Structure formats: C-alpha cells, structure tokens
Length: 130
Image (cartoon, rainbow, N blue to C red; front, side, top):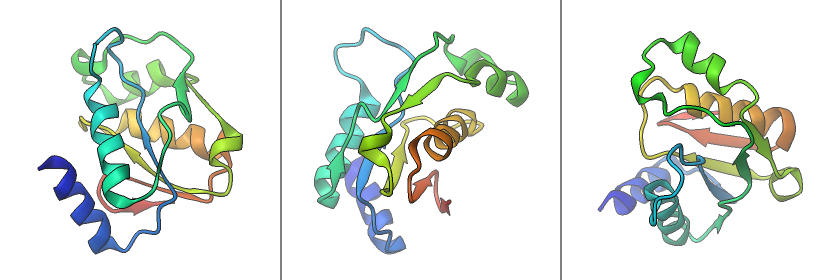
C-alpha cells in the first residue's frame, strides 16, 4: 500500500525519473532494510532503475532519532556520504527515505548528489526538485 501510494503520487507529479535511490540505512545489520525494500518496489512500480549503492555512507554516525537539534543533525551528517558519479551523472533521481523528521538526512544526501554526483536533477520529500 505504501509503494502504491508513493507511485501514485509520483505519477500525479509527472516526474520523469531515471532512478530511485534509497537513503543509506542508519541501522546496519538488519536482515531486511525497510528503506531499500520500499524503494526497490517503488522503482519496479514506476518502471525505472533502482540503485541501492549509488549513495553510500562513508562515515559512522549515530542514529539521529535521539538528536533533535537540526544544526547538530547536519553537523553529524557532514561528509557522511559518497556518490557513485558514473551511475548518477546526468540522471534525474528520486531519493527515497522511510522516515522524515527534519530533512537533515535527505538534505545531506541531496547535497552529495549535487556536489559529487553531478545529477541532472533530483526529487525528494514531497514536492521539491533541484
């Protein structure tokens, strides 16, 4: 139901997406990572590519669930992500996360996509594109 709702939303926005990228999970070691499972199913539903390793975490960070200050969250995430430029350059991507609180994680991932990935454009959290 979540994937169908998300796919319906994307279709209504008329977004022309090449790839769905999951945000790297903060809790490693889970047998099933919800953000990856949902984003993969969404890519299938949309008929676009799925790239679980286009954005990877290169810095250990604590889970942000207990960090409420936006500036602290952003500081923790500074330099935390690396992007596979060859896989995303000149593509339009949908960045997918399964939990949204302050936007710090999505902002950090999208910043890395712009700076390192040279993406054509991206969509994240609701209606924003860059």
